[in-house]
Image 1 (spheres, rainbow, N blue to C red):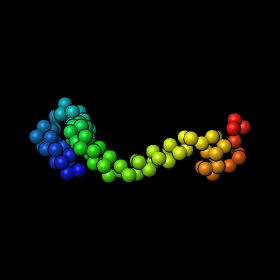
Image 2 (cartoon, rainbow, N blue to C red):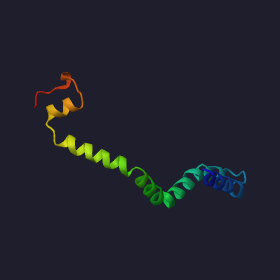
Image 3 (cartoon, rainbow, N blue to C red):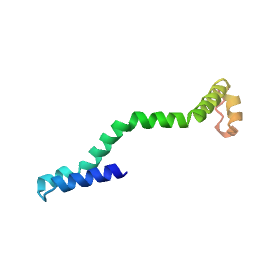
Image 4 (cartoon, helix red, strand yellow):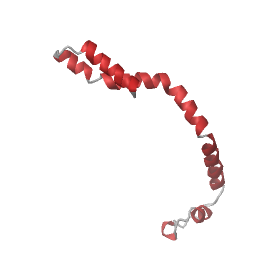
Length: 90
């Protein structure tokens, strides 16, 4: 991401003067910037993801509901699981 790279580069230019103390500090710079940016954008990103995948999510929940109503034997047949995994608890 350009924003993160530019921010990290700016921190390095402004605060890293070659001192041992600042070198130890700078290793935390990128993760801190990434966490800050993500925390500010998460709600928007999640809303866009949810809207984009709403139809897929609806389909998943529909199939899940159908499978939840099946017995174990019916479920194994529906998922095409062989008899090797049968537990005899049908």
